[in-house]
Every structure is written in structure tokens, then in C-alpha cells.
Length: 292
Image (cartoon, rainbow, N blue to C red; front, side, top):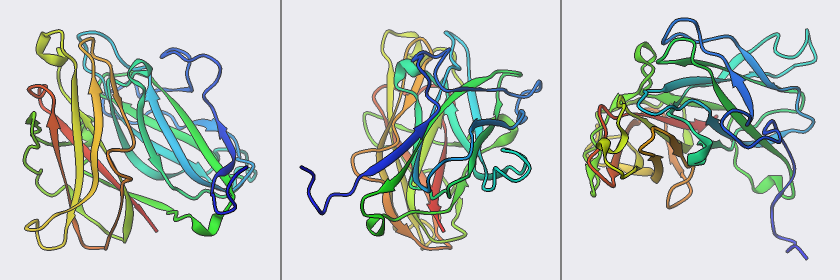
């Protein structure tokens, strides 16, 4: 019997489908015919039946041996999907979610946000790729009907830090080898109070693991500072991003602790990382803060 003080979701909906492979999981999201340009808006879920309090996003299906694959994807919503038809009025709620070599074989390149979405909202994506016309797939799962909604903290908007759309990449980072590396320069300054943090990592490399038989995992920290970087507060810690020697990538949404830390408007955001081997070529990172 469940404890009377437990809190769990009694509703969920997803587009995962029945085929758990890089070619069949979720929904295919096209890229533009030109590299580094967003492709068409693509609906992945029609108007959701319940108010939802969280979303899991998993990118897969864009990986090939000895090939560089990076993507930046916008999460789109249409809050009134029944007016004019689902997807007739898309707006961007999360801009430029970063994924690199995303593969279901590495668990998917995943993000999780306690993002509040009203019943009736349609969900879509638009993505760009570093390789022209390169599609990828996305699976999303939304959660609703919590037992104790008053115990949940949710947000309605997300700020993206460090994405570089011109090259479908992020901001340069230097992970340490078997140790935490130095923090990046500031990825940007918060424009509203935020409390939930995510981060992503990618490379510009066709030989993950340096051509050896060893895959690479990089553990990412996201931090914030309100004194110009002298003192930094860790907001998300040890988020693991793993890349195989056949250029397949995956990333977990949670690290060693829940990525919860209140950061006020006006704070600078930074990232750092520790790699299990010498880092791959040209590592770059992007961070995300949810609030509102």
C-alpha cells in the first residue's frame, strides 16, 4: 500500500512506439537541406489530455562510425492545439537542446525538465544538424496527475546558455583527464530566477576514444556565480555523457544529485568536466536553466 504522504504521477503519455531501435524509436525530426539551419517544425504529440508537470526528452538515431553528428533542437509547443489545428501556432519553449552522436545504444541523449504544460498542448520539435539534411529521432514522455501537486515545483520557461547555432555546437570547454578541468568562461547571464539545471556536451571528432578500444565518459558540472566568477555555486553535478568508439553518444539527465539550485536573475553560468580518458577533439558544451 502506498504511503499517504507519497507523491507520484498517475498519468503519462509518450511517443516512444513499439520499436526500440535507433531507426524506430520516437519520431523522426528532419533537418534542413543546408547544414546549421533549422528544419521543418514537426509534431510529435497531439494535444495532451492532462496538465503535465515534467517532460523527458531523448534524442537518438543520428550516429555512424567515423562520422561527426551534432544537433541543436528546439522544443515547440502549441498551447491551444484545438484552435486552428494542432501545431498551427508553434512557439519555442526550450531553444537549442544539444545532442551529439545520439544513439539508443548508449541510452539516448536525454534531458528532463519539471516543465508545466497545460492540457491541450501539442508538442513538436525543429532541429538543425552539422551535416546537411541529417534527420534524427526524438522520444518524449510527459507526466501528469500527481498525487500531491502542491508538493511539486515546476517552471514555465527555460534559458539556454552557450549554444552556437552557426556551427551547431556549444561553447568551448576543456575537461580534465581523470580530474575536473577548469570552468568555461561565462556561458551567459540569467535573465530570470531559475532552479533546475541541465547540460550537454559534444565533439568535433570522427575517432571517439582517440582511435583506441576505449569509450569516453565525461562528467559535467553546471555552476553559477553572482560575483563575476570568483565564487561558484554548483547547480548540477556529475552529469554523465558517454561516447563509444563507434561514434555513438548518450547522456543522462541526472548526475550525482538532483540538479536543483535556486539562481537569481543576473548570475553568470559556467560548466566544467572530467573525462575518463584524454578528451576528444574540440569539446563544446551548452547549459539550460528552468524557472518562471
